[in-house]
Length: 462
Ligand code: HEM
Image (cartoon, rainbow, N blue to C red; front, top):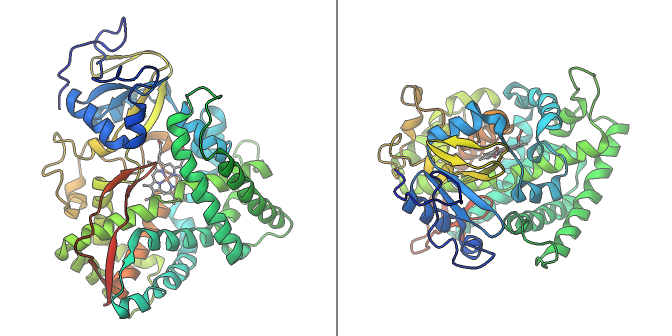
């Protein structure tokens, strides 16, 4: 893709591109379209202007970057110049405070160094049985629907299983069923509101934003449940090997200090928000693709049934689920949950010959990069074999970023991949899945890329 427009976007900018329709509405620019359908609005701009384009969303101008070389530049070569700053991150901060996902600089680095070792794949191994137990419980609840041929909505069901399994991994038995459903509902409400705030935060504060009161209530509910759990763990460590334990034992390598109670709260909420919807939507898309590709589905089912008997998979089994992992990776190439991420350029920069002014917001668009014709042949085809070791070798490292890139690479990458392999194997051990004919699956680009009206499927015992 090449930039065709030679108009300038900023006065004084050498080759930054103007966005058609950017002046459509005074003050708000393309914001109404972006709020209505951000993916289509931004894709339209990329389609017309190519790999570097800019779009006015009210009080901000966003530079859209859609080439793997730009990923290399922003996340590696000149990463110090691109920081998490701006209304999108401020929105997350209103819920997660100074958690890892929304901070920068020395505060972020300290936390990242403390937490990184706790998320190593081997550390997470002890959680396999917690995850498998919770997943088995959720999947068995589908049995009556499978026996009666009753359709289920896949995303809703996977969200419920994924949240349940994640909360078990996070807090093991320190949270009861009532608190679990209250917490899940509160995170749902807060997540929906962040989705609005991330596009509207730069509007004047006096403008009323619908849903603010419910958001504050949700935040209070989250704190009411989480703080007592943290406090009781300080008094009585659980040693159960859950993620809260890992946070409590994490130490700063230089000072030997642990995290304050407030910081543990912020990190717990960060993990909840970061895991919320991401794993479930990625799983739902994977199953959706497998339904449309019976040969690939058969290979996933064959791996699941190759595990001894119908016992739940264990950590040591993950290596036998290689094709399952590739199917998950390929689904995330095509419908990765994080379809866009943003950074603020601290100083003026030059990307691919275009001037990026100091202080401007850049958006990296994995949805476009994951289909870039310079890298991906038959970009729209679902081909898990792209991720065999041989095929992935030598690929541009900016070409595939479902878990982000550079220093802020998703800390839960191993966890999410492990959870996905387990869940997919356990699902295919139990059921054969078919799409309900006639149910149209549409894209909705909220914080995560989800199916707007869900995915209706029927199940049959495997
Ligand atoms: C399929 C599931 C997941 C996907 C696709 C995903 C994707 C991402 C992406 C793209 C980023 C980088 C955002 C950016 O730099 O702009 C990120 C960061 C992060 N993710 Fe995930 N994530 C997933 C699951 C999880 C899970 C399960 C956890 C927790 C165990 C988690 C915790 C985090 C945290 C804490 C960060 C911030 C890291 C930092 O800034 O240092 N994620 N994730």
